[in-house]
Length: 184
Image (cartoon, rainbow, N blue to C red):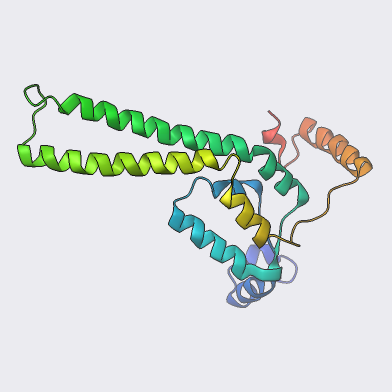
């Protein structure tokens, strides 16, 4: 029975061991664009994972195309998140920096807050600037180019792409997974 329905016995230790030992890992666009949304530590950890996969990693051409096509918008959006955090932090500071107006905090806490406020503000500005620079000088894109060299599949021919569009339209109209919920 396990031979006939292997997907229903995915937790079999022998099967899992074989799978992890021999499978090919295929990333989607979200994995690559996520690199702009992670902390430095998480990004570096994912780089190490990508590197450790060696020849067992493959990226479809379309995934790389979508990554490159969406990269600038994602970088810009991340910069805006830093800008928003900076604005909120400055607003908070302005609410408590007038010493004779509520809300009141003790002098020690007040002084600690301003010490850390400037450290956090400086770090946020630095990271915002780093993201803004990635529009033209992108360390993530360069690192991926290095890690994924020779691991990106070929583009479809125009005929094959046209046939896939027709097939996709058919599947979407009949609500056949995967992907029909992504139509919009």
